[in-house]
Image (cartoon, rainbow, N blue to C red; front, top):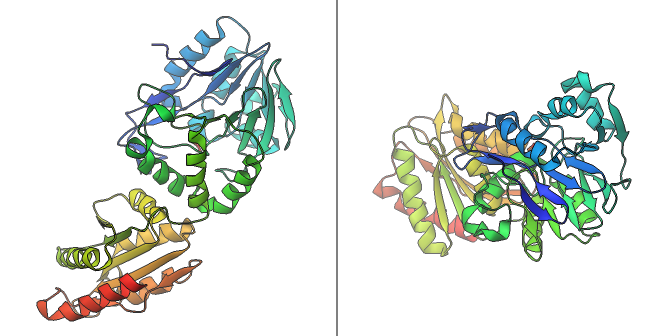
Length: 399
Ligand code: FEO
């Protein structure tokens, strides 16, 4: 069924949501689905910004055909070449041989690999600040390299103030009945997934996000049209840009504390729970506890982005770090986690070494302070360990 929604004058959303896909990029769970946004501008010339994932191709092509209502498609602007947005380029190009493809040099290098059949199509290669006019609308191109791929760029409509922002300002989660963020209780319905999306997809590229935010600060943005999740408009935009400022500067959003544990048989889990309760009582902070084997690491990465203080409990396993914890540390390293205070607790029945090994890995992260005090558990946290636990709680509270 056709589902086209107006963003503002002449601009329409023609995307769709997928609630069936289990894993985004075959990695990240999507319990609430995901949307793939595409936009069409019906001006003197017609222009589409990005296509969509193959999973919604039927819906997408039906929306596109209906929106065009028999008109030719003059331009297909490709802001991002990742297949969740570019999968329909060859199909749309075959349906509309009249169209001109618009991208930058890197866009077309990638397009040649994915869609060699577009090699002979008409193309416009744009650079930073260059524009495309469709009549009443003029779109200025803003390069946004590594947000999230090197060819990523934004387009800004000087007529309406709409910023087409590619992956930036996107979120996991299917769209419900509205395309607009302000029609939802975004903090309740989407914020955790927005943060998880940011941290895991573009978290590594904070400096590049900062660079593009500086460019964005110079323009009057009235709408943000991302490729995933709701569209932002009006006074709500500043709130979400502030989130992006914090996330890209690796600044905590709140003063909560996250406790992460791995546990083979429940003993390390029990110690982490006892610690969390004491920490809550001592610090007065919101303390959240996660079992690394039960909570997907992308959710934990999102939580690590939210807070400034993290406590990690790991058993010693094969004379090393418990594998799910080791994987998390690797992910933190890849995503260049910064500006954290991290405390470590280890368990080992005969030779606990996981804290030392975690310290070695985490010490390579920028602006990360590792708390000197380490809690060591020998198999089980006993009543006789209470004093050591209290000292650890004190150290974490004060750090
Ligand atoms: Fe949603 Fe980087 O693609």
